[in-house]
Length: 122
Length: 202
Image (spheres, helix red, strand yellow):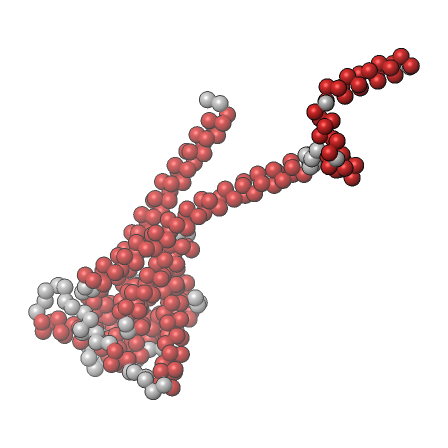
């Protein structure tokens, strides 16, 4: 039973038959194998392209973090406005106020005179 | 050349060398797959007894190898490729068992023999005499049937060692077991085949 010679013979004969069947594969099957191989190679290209992008990911992350840090350190760039009071609205709503704009020069002169008078007093 | 241009030039050189390396890797992988695909197909076909299924399994194995192991040294590709393929074949058998159980439950089970005709699937390319061709094909059919009847692990060990020509260590990697187990499975497979084919093969 345990005859190495016979075992080798079986393996050799099986290999010959197998190789023969490989040689007899038809063109359609070979074409499908070829297509499958090219799909695998496309997969390789795709995975390498994504790997190239991933290589830059740490640098992009560091840059984004740096921008965030700079923005936080500079603080909010906001102009503080004086609170709007009710009297401001009243002034805008009064009919007289429009007339005031029409006689603006008069009020400027009036203001100058008042200042002058105050200077005299002071 | 200012510093910025210098950095760009270094980056371009690196990209160029990476591109050349990638192209070389792609060529090597193409060469490897082209060299192994036919035998892999026949090995898978003997295991699942269906050419279309075998083609799908081989393609899946090629894609997985390219996706996950292309960067590994070329000499590791053969056992890794067959490991992926054998895993695919085992998964296929598991799915088939479940499917057959369901089909039997619905009363639509089929025998393997009804589905597959090896002679019809193997046209002769070498232009031999029809008698010789038929004799060879019948011998191969008997061999395939005998191999198919072996337990899974024995079948894997026999086909990887005999058909693919992997050594014990490579077969162990492909099968995911120890070298000792490979020797045991292979030895049992050969004895079983001698018993089955003995009367036809002398």
